[in-house]
Length: 166
Image (cartoon, rainbow, N blue to C red; front, top):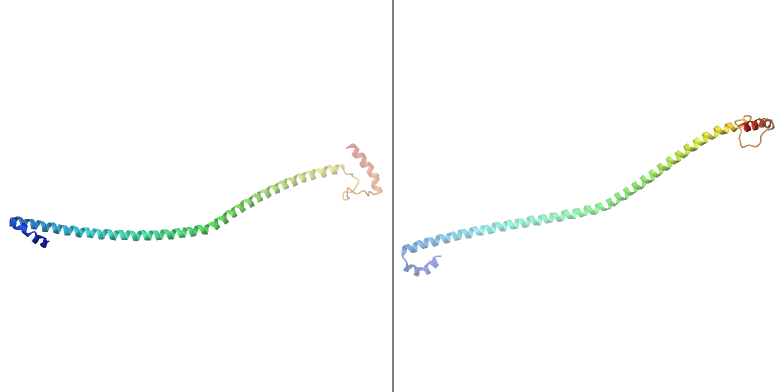
């Protein structure tokens, strides 16, 4: 600045000394203000550059964490697929077993109802058969046997007569 002022010294000679010292003071104040502003600007650049670098580091760390989490999630999904498939298969098997069980229960109920019906029919049948049975025949003998002794043949006529009355 002084060099410039010395070169411009020729202009100073033309002007009044008071004006030149006043202009010189203003010029020095302006140069000092410019230097202060340049320093502030440089500080702001450094500050924003450090903030930018910090944010870049944070971004890189966040992206790394995100990739790791995505890799873990994909690994979990790949592990869960076979488990889910097995679970679905087991659910299908349970459904089939339940259907087979309900079908078997229904069949058992039908068989039980049929057995009761047959038991009723069987219990009603012997009652009628006992009315039709010949009283002279022994109870312990088989009804289908045709070998009736001669002493029982005489009583069979009584049995025939009774049957005709009924």
